[in-house]
Amino acid sequence: MTDDSATPTRYIFVTGGVVSSLGKGIAAASIGRLLVERGLKVTIQKFDPYLNVDPGTLSPFQHGEVFVTDDGAETDLDLGHYERFIDESLSQANNVTTGRIYQDILTKERRGDFLGATVQVIPHVTDEIKAHIRRLAPSKQVVITEVGGTVGDIESLPFLEALRQFRQDVGRENTLFVHLTLVPYIAAAGELKTKPTQHSVRELMETGIQPDILICRTDRPLTEEVRRKIAHFCNVDVHNVVESRDVETIYEVPLRYREQRLDDHILSLLRLEAPEPDLSSWEGLVDRIKRPEHQAVRIAVVGKYTRLVDAYLSVQQALIHGGIANDCRVDIDWISSEDVSPDDVDWLARYDGVLIPGGFGVRGVEGMVDAVRFVREAGIPFFGICLGLQCAIIEFARNVCDLIESHSSEFDRGTSDPVISLMDSQRQVTDMGGTMRLGAYPCRLQPGTRALTIYGLDDVSERHRHRYEVNNQYREILAAGGMRFSGLSPDEQLVEIVELPDHPHFIATQFHPELRSRPNRPHPLFAAFVAAAARRRAGREEGTAKVATGERGERATVGG
Image 1 (tube, rainbow, N blue to C red):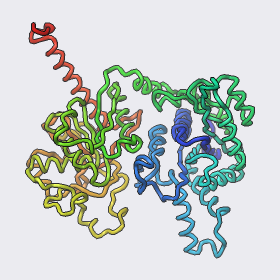
Image 2 (image 1 turned 30 degrees about the horizontal axis):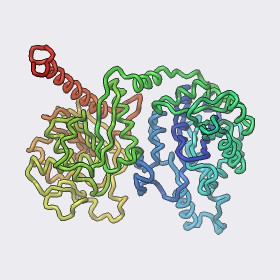
Image 3 (image 1 turned 135 degrees about the vertical axis):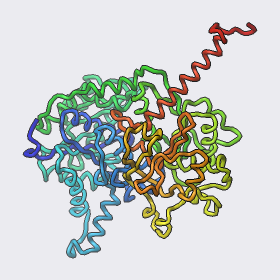
């Protein structure tokens, strides 16, 4: 491998065309994984063209989940893919929006930094974009930048112009453009059509950018004839036309790219040398996802935004990781909490585990509370995250501690028993963002608890995104009812984890453990939850078998 201290940073830019949602984030993350496996120091960033400063105020139904980094940045969900694939914690610098670019420029303009110059898209906006790319270069050999949206969108033009300039600034030999396109199969014609790709590349070239590599999304193999046609009309080498078909799991994508030697072609174009990758470990985890040794567990996720799975993308992936840890498949049913009522909740008994994820606002909260009561009383493994913990507290206070008016002051300001409320230090803060706990905070696990056994550590750090906390005035009452506060802040003022010792598996966290889970390092709380679900499944199967065979081990027969 080349000496990275003497070698300039290389830059890979990933753009997309034809239609959105082709999977640029997975493509960028998969390239990152291959380069990491070759021993290179890699980071990935996302440019989002929308005018919001960050996605923190966007509806989950519009934009999916908000991924939170250790430093408290609210970012695009693709950063979750980046972290899970390259196994590195990212930061605020890894997600930049048009809104943040303009906010930074206008702040400088109001300060007089431009010394009276007319502030324009070129050079001021493009210079700001290029500065964000360079900010990641120190200590990295490769910086991968994904540009959101599709080529031709008016919102993306400043970013593409900045990338065109950047190639001139740092040298063509230090930059590489990967363009993701669609090659659809038209049934009426009985063939794959390359025109969408040709038009998309032509649109990109009109901005002054010639792609070096084309990744073609398709639902069937690209023939050699189709590859040559694309290469001919798009001015790329035929071996740099990469097929990207749908796969069973997103973690399989790096392996399919490797089969086509994509990483070799990238290193050749960037004039980098690196050892051959050892993908045996990654192949192993993909094999456990596709061909697990044990039977599947069935998990119900009862949440507020379940009609868009991307709203809980990290939860979905962390459950998959929990399955990897237990060598079993995890089948997830996404259930709207608005469909749960106290008179119709016993159908949850068919599940091996129930998870309640985070969310904001009162809609659907009572359904979550009803679900918690059922699984608590029925002994079904339960995992609550953020709002899930708060609903668990509310349910326990109402139905075990006889505080029947218990609620969160977020949902009922007039409640007589606000078991969930703002801390005193938050009450005078008028800016909503100022009252939130965002990013990584320490948690100290208490002796003799299930949480300590699961983690195997006394102190951990986990990421938060919430505003309301467990009201300390009710901790003694809840503890007297049998609830254990198994994780606390170091000063013991904030509740981080609760559990019920007498329940088969009942754990809830104020933080979001899904944000730290990786396919090669599943989060211990998810691994433990899936393990508990597997035990319940095995126990139910054993009970069914006993009923089927009768008391003496003989198969029961009707009328027998």
